[in-house]
Image (tube, rainbow, N blue to C red; front, side):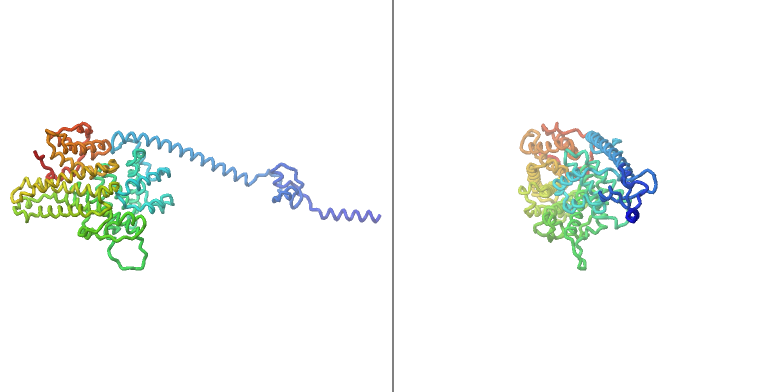
Length: 571
């Protein structure tokens, strides 16, 4: 009896130690639809898998939080897929539109008016950016083919932030005009040139309207204006180019780019020499554009030499590597024979070319009526400019001498411009001599005549050694140099012997201008002008038939503002 009582007590104690079962299965077992032993605090299945065992207090159907999140993610994913599909369709239609516009541009030249192009520009500032590969390709093309012509950007500092956040990138207007300039030099991307140019204009206008304070003007916006002006000039939009250049000059002056090297008290601050040099190069690029614009249009120059306190640009090697290099000011360099960089040589050539054209375009009746040769202001200026041209040609530094540097654009440009200035100076002198021979020494006419042919032959020799004539002749001034050389050869060609040496030289230049006239309006206009002059002189050439007819008249200001720079052919 006592044993039974003891056994029942042990059973009761065991049952008391066992935790009561949960009324419902745990959530994980219900979710998996498996039998749950409902043991508290954790069922055997959850304990074995080391899961958190949670029991429900009701029979409500189980809804997992993860399942609700999954549904939300699925909805978002579907939305993104629809957006991606829509974007791909837009890009496909965009590419088709570009191909269509490519044909339109090829048909109507440089003044596209199709509704598709207008719609593209109306995309405004929210258009889809070009693919990264395209951006990198065009940027590389720019620094390989164009940078040496206008070496104002520092390649590493310009390329590094291109794909960083927006506030660290160069201005979009600068990016697009760089890509537009590069596209124009490549057959594969030429159809994008005018499109990217229009985008650059849109972004520049947006930046101008967004913040009108002086602090909003940056060096990148000045550089964009300068490159846009160059692009417009190369496409024969001379009026637009001049207006854009005016804004670039004023913006540069507001940033004191014309007085970069004014002596200031040393405040112990670190000076970034690359940044200082970039500011110098930006200023001298604008200076060259102003000088050539003045020379080719007859409009007054906007930059005065006496106000410039910025040193000439250093060498390209020093600029690339950040090695500080001492240079002279413009006025000092003209008086010294010290070596200078290729870019500085282009600045000096632009300066003296402007002086020459400004002198030959002078219309001073008092100079014409002067009977004293030595006291005549015109001939005094003539002699001074002629001496400076001789001095510059004799004292060219080694990095500008030909044929050693025939692959360097600035070396080609400096030599061609100095020879062209020589032709302009002495052709104007011959015209003036014919209208007033009294009081002039007899040797003066012969001296000017003897300077013309060597200058024209030197220009022709340079053209024959250039490896990429197409890129060189995109510059309207190079086309003008070819035209001036052709006039000299024409004056020395006899109608009875058009196949002589000078006639062959004339024919070669006409072939060059005719070859590039299909895509270059300036070259086409000058080729037509040469053909007209040859017909008036009775000279025939097989290349005359290769010159394409100019359907719309293109006014070349240089041909109209200096009427006295022409003279009749010698018989």
